[in-house]
Image 1 (cartoon, rainbow, N blue to C red):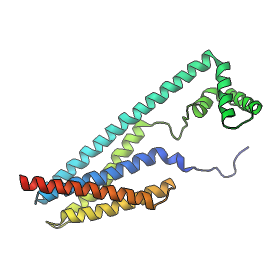
Image 2 (image 1 turned 90 degrees about the vertical axis):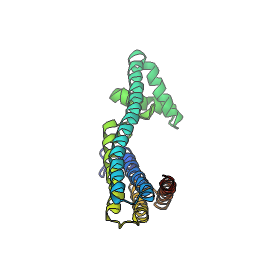
Image 3 (image 1 turned 180 degrees about the horizontal axis):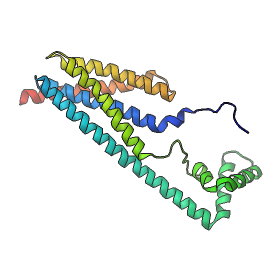
Image 4 (image 1 turned 120 degrees about the horizontal axis):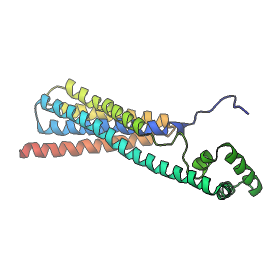
Length: 231
């Protein structure tokens, strides 16, 4: 039976959406905090811009490397579990069939029907059935290291471009305030967009990301001012 209108579930976006929101959010907060901290300690706009650009490049590379290593570790773990399932299916197919039927029974299916379903799923693709129903590994949640790394690096750079542009356009002496305000607006917009794309309530994610962004910028501004006066 074919569906007349295939559904696109929001969970299918979880892989790239998580990396994109994390990258852009970190790009705004990290770079804005750096710019605000330097601006509180220095009076030269060129010094602020150099620090900001350096933060953008270093942050994008760090995000890419961190995401790649982290998601690669997840992918390695998934592959190890899948390899073990392949070995178990080859060495004990009857036991694996019983295990799959037991999973369906635990989910509320009648034993006889669960056995029938397990037999049919095994006949079609035993490995895919165990990956999905025993391990919880499906195509839309499987680890993709390269995709995560590239998405995080790109979105970090896009997010970091906002405070840099604001710093470049700000008059001398007002960089910290303009960058802080503009970045908080950008964070609020990002939180709302991420929540909307993920199908979540808009208010809570927006308030959360704005609060922590404000906290980070306030902390770096205070530290920058203290270091600037001390030096």
